Image (cartoon, rainbow, N blue to C red; front, side, top):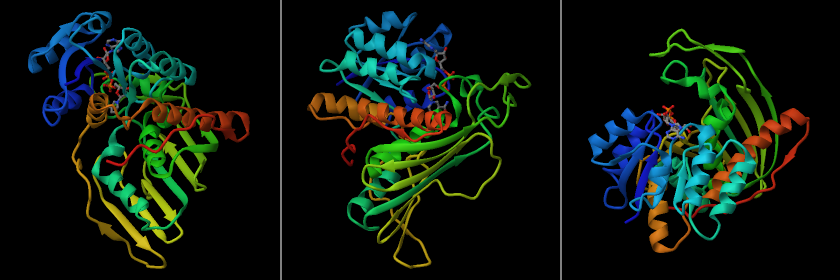
Amino acid sequence: MQRIGIVGIGNISGIYLKNLTGMFKDRVKVTAVTDFIPERADQAAAEYSLKSFRTTEELLNSPDVDIVLNITPPPYHYPVALAAVRAGKHVYNEKPFCVKREEAAEVLKAAAGTVRVGGAPDTFLGAGIQTCRKLLDDGWIGKPVAAAAFMMNHGPEHWHPNPEFFYKNGGGPMFDIGPYYLTALVSLLGPVVRVSGSAKKGFDERTITSEPRKGSVITVDVPTHLGGTLDFSCGAVGTIIMSFDVYAHTLPFIEIYGTEGSLRVPDPNTFGGPVSVSRFRSETWSEVPLLKKYSENSRGLGITDMAEAIGEGRPHRANGDLTSHVLEVMHGLHEASASDQYYPVKSSCDRPAPM
Ligand SMILES: NC(=O)c1ccc[n+]([C@@H]2O[C@H](COP(=O)([O-])OP(=O)(O)OC[C@H]3O[C@@H](n4cnc5c(N)ncnc54)[C@H](O)[C@@H]3O)[C@@H](O)[C@H]2O)c1
């Protein structure tokens, strides 16, 4: 059984620790944790009977760690992943995979042929999107001709305890939430070949309203509203909006439009449903029962799949090619806006095998 060492015991670590030592305990084993803030690592270690290391380097040198789960904030995704790979460990990063495309390429190159690289999100492996995948593959809406994807809210500073990084390099709605939407779309429709985009910053400053930093002001360094188009290799044309500048809206999460009908895809930031289909000129939508497992919060499913894939010698689904392709698409959307031109996407990836 593959043994996991976790770097970064912050906000999202709770659900990983709970699921990897609960729901997935017969498939992976968490052995170690580390954090810049030692008390955080010590607390998790005490609660889950793990080894608490003082530094990432010590964790990387541990013979009891096979896979590093890197759940630090985005600027640390690259240095921690590269160090892990160079130490001969498999690595699974939270999203976005890295901040820069060159960083992602370097990690993949360093890992090639020796260790596995994977990355969040893993929500596309859940019951909701896997049910959509089955409906698409079984032809329920015919050939996809178009897709639409919308995520709009007014930012995370009302709930996250330390929301600064959402408005700094590597943050913004596209890099924060875009990975869920784009990974779902790529897993359903295949890779993206060309994008256009228009990115804006709606507010120069954001005031934190969550504890413990209530009242602190964050200077916004990145675009917080992005509208774009996505040309998929399958021929479908996508429309996407990702925004931290919108209070309310009535648009769906994701819809896919085919030659024989339309498919409503659930929130790709969750594992469950609902999924519904409308065929031909029907004016109603029919909800489809979820046909696959994992409808509850199953964070950790992606790294568990990777761990099992290592043992079984098969490709893992939330893999480095997919997550770095999504990273390039996100950059391409911003770059298209900055350059007033379409951005041709250079990378590609296979659709991960259905669950
Ligand atoms: N919070 C969420 O709901 C959520 C959801 C999905 C994904 N994520 C992703 O998870 C990652 C972490 O988010 P978070 O909300 O838990 O952040 P956080 O700021 O709450 O926690 C990050 C932790 O990592 C530690 N850390 C940072 N760099 C380190 C390093 N090099 N070595 C050791 N420890 C280090 C920090 O001390 C902190 O405890 C981000 O990439 C984010 O995009 C978060």
